[in-house]
Length: 480
Ligand code: NAD
Image 1 (tube, rainbow, N blue to C red):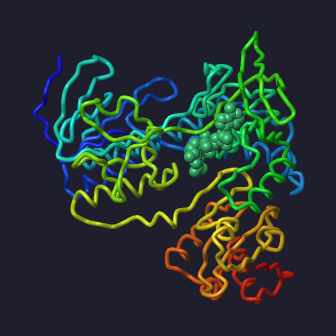
Image 2 (image 1 turned 90 degrees about the vertical axis):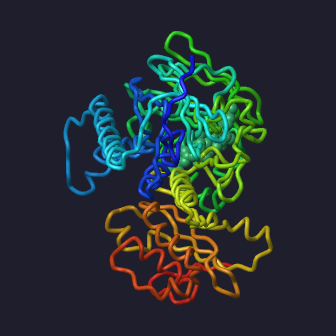
Image 3 (image 1 turned 90 degrees about the horizontal axis):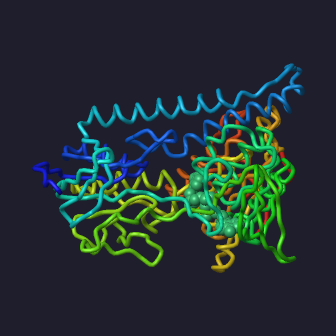
């Protein structure tokens, strides 16, 4: 039996990932009566209202880097440690504690804004009604709203012939909770997620093989950066096999046999654990009743216009559900805020052209704007400067000299068209590039901006100076 409640909301948000969370908080701040519905469970199958996104990856990466540094880098500083041990249980507990802390902060924000948070599975019935099914009692009820925001995010793509059991074969999310360091680990997919997970587990001691179906490594990146990344990861010991399409993975006793194909034929590989990181698809199964007539494309993405409006009046979609931009948490947050404002009559459009991307490996990779290959394909007249981190004195002082900053500017107007960084803390360095491009800066603007010394950000400044033929402490590297 379905109960129709008398509850009436200005905004109901379905899903509390980064996009839904931001949308709910901003809606409430604007005085809109808001509820958020979520059916998420955490790694221990406990109810949780909130999705803390990629924070688990960040927490484990930090632990893995510290462990790895202690073994491989501290002696150079004259610091010696004996009997170094890894207690993975404590490491995972630390991560979970951080997630819980952040989750609690998010719940506090919900509570302080009087946002109703409902733990249930939700389904859009029509532009004004959402059906919810309580997880515990399975009781159905219907909530009414003036506007509905769909923010159910994405789910991992699974492969036929590979059964995820999260004991031997893991999905990318469960791969943050593997309870022993695998001796031999295979990761299927060398995309962002596969590489970040490889960086964690290889630093903790797993011999890691990445099997990537595409011949082209990280094809969305500037090819110079992806080429540099490929060499650096290989030097770190990652076994990266390109053009290797996995067909099956079968468990027998405690060994997984992977079958994959490349140009030379079919191969098998035996490992202890497998992580499947083959991409994500929008979470739209069961999101709307068929009679709601929500328009999806053939891949399941929700159709939206440039204002995140679906084909149904008063129904919006944000974050990974749409093709308005890449699947990035910060894009989702911006859309969530944009939609809340839009509902309240404020129009602050998002500049999708100036959207930074980061791969959180060591070294990190971060980029904004266009790649060299895309600009050349368009026939744009460009000039390029490349500044190596091994000429940056801060990078030398902290011994993180691997990497480059690459700036691409228009050959005639000098406007910056793209900045691509590989190196330590690239995720932080890119913020300056984002700001510069948001203000349509020229490389001259960046070159005239004084940077503190000694900092890594001087490398960005020096790349801009290189474009002006004014770099003074490095042999110039300018191409056009
Ligand atoms: P992805 O699409 O970036 O990478 C998946 C890779 O798997 C692809 O390169 C694909 O060729 C490969 N693949 C697919 N089937 C295969 C097979 N049978 N054998 C071998 N390789 C196969 O997806 P992802 O890395 O899983 O990430 C999912 C989404 O989440 C992406 O949109 C990503 O940008 C986003 N994400 C972002 C961050 C970040 O911002 N740092 C972190 C994690 C994920």
